[in-house]
Image (cartoon, rainbow, N blue to C red; front, side, top):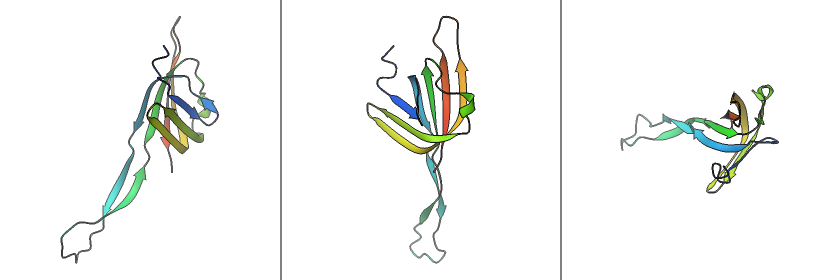
Length: 117
């Protein structure tokens, strides 16, 4: 099924993940703080960035699991590339690994990375 990944490649450190089935970038956000002075006559609010959350990346792949439970908690660069998409995160923490296998079927594994600054 070469059409599933449609040319998307994902690499974490020196590990290239298998045939990509799904890819999700979640929760990229920035909180703001109201910094409007009490003496502001225009009554227009002013904001400043408080905390930035770079979210997480979840990937589901088919094939032999290129990841190992011994990688959980380690940090490496995560690169995602393909038609119309290009992400690079210099600090991706391997947060979670789920693995499934059925007799006569390809293995399926899901990996979640937490992005850091």
